[in-house]
Amino acid sequence: MQVLMALLSGLVFGVGLIISGMTDPSKVIGFLDLAGKWDPSLAFVMGGAILVGVFAYRFATTRSQAILGGSMQLPTNRRIDRRLVLGALAFGAGWGLAGYCPGPVLASLATGGSKPLIFTMAMLAGMVIFEIQDRFAQPSEEKTA
Amino acid sequence: MIDWEHFTPWSSLTGGLLIGAAAAILLLFNGRIAGISGILGGLLRPMAGDIGWRMALVLGLVGAPLVYGLAAPPPSVHVDADMTTLVVAGLLVGVGTRYGSGCTSGHGVCGLSRLSPRSMAATAAFMIAGFVTVFIARHLFG
Image 1 (tube, each protein chain N blue to C red):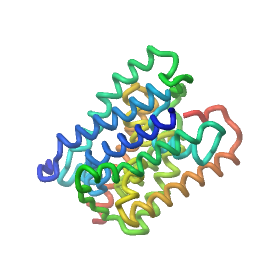
Image 2: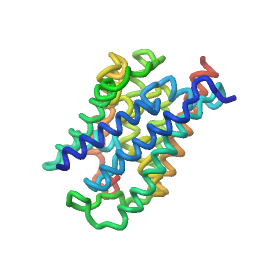
Image 3: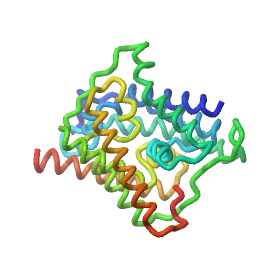
Image 4: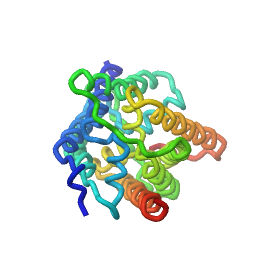
């Protein structure tokens, strides 16, 4: 059942990304191009998603368990450290270069030809590099999301 | 200057509401944060009993254009980036989202919905980096 709900969530997420315009890199870059002709559409994507999200999280905090059982696994780390900021800066640079972020590129794989595929392979390689580096780094307790 | 020609407030808002609904489904039913980079990253660090839902969510995302295609023709998209740029950008996104513990979905949507200070900092950082990168690529070198 948890697997089914995750599948449904992924499908709804992906259809939302397609309808919103997030799967079109030129639209994403049009949003990031403040100095050119600016397309503010993606602010509406974020606004719409957060509007629903705020209520969902409000409701979630009143529950100790998920509907299908198991604990609510919400992040507890509140530290803003160098790792977080440098990582986010690197991500933003990559996002601005190609116009893809992880969700939209996955939702482009089936119909988008070779470009989203190449980006996805490179992105997965980047994640593997992180895993390898992280395993060799000294063990720390601050790794939870 | 606003690009009125490409401005799509209604479809973008509708898509955003669906993204929020997807995050709500995963949160309320499964007790999980819908952060795509974290869900993918977890598959590279497999733990027993933790793989199925991650695979299913990725499968849903990948299958979404096929489901969408049943109802409407796929929207036209443009990828300006060449192969080299795609590889560099993909590496940056892969490494950056894992070090930064999230991307547009985990920090930008879920984190801001929870009013997490960590996610606000991360979202500010990746938005600024995105703005600066596009400025450099389009207006200094473009």
